[in-house]
Length: 241
Image (cartoon, rainbow, N blue to C red; front, side, top):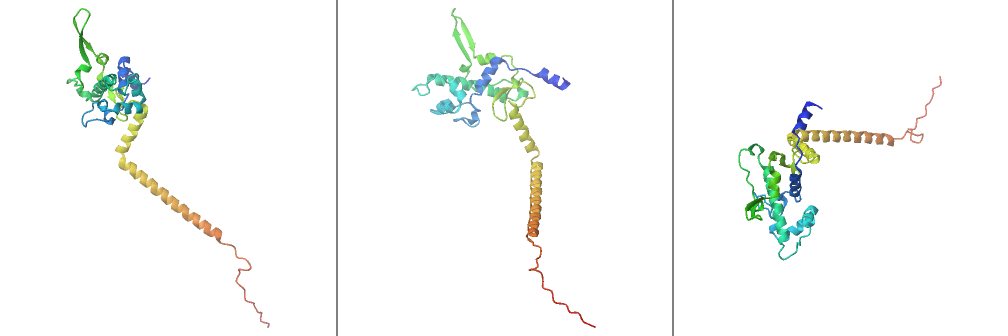
């Protein structure tokens, strides 16, 4: 193994299983900007606040339909549906906030989560009547995790765990699309110029081929002169001496 690969392998970190579960949940639905009811500049999920949106999304996205399995979407008071949607929305907000955070400032400032505190922390009395704080499983899954490895794919918008520190996209397909787009942006003028030159060369070649073909057809149309088409000769007379 080369030095570069050994170094890359030493920096690789698999995603914690408990955290990967929440990452998969966050990707049940598309990025919040693509959902109905989104307020510009605020990427909280608002789809569950409008009647009919949840049902429409459940019909469109099978993972979301499976997530709501067992809940009555058409109930007069869909408490279970709202609770599940609020929980999913909170998970998505937390992970996307981390993913969109400037990685260089993760250790320099507090991480502000744009969601309700009651979705993650609660308190209750135990059997002895003593107060106990309960944390959302997502918070426990994030404890001690390298937050810089939680990222948002710039192509498809999914949240993913970067096993390698230099991993920008969630999968190989998205990485190829990103490379292609960057190449086209960086060499836009050169790329266009090359396409124009190639098109002009092909057009010129086609014109020349058409001229050659036309000349060939013209020559094929010409027939060798026959006796009937030959010019009549005048009789010649010999002068006797």
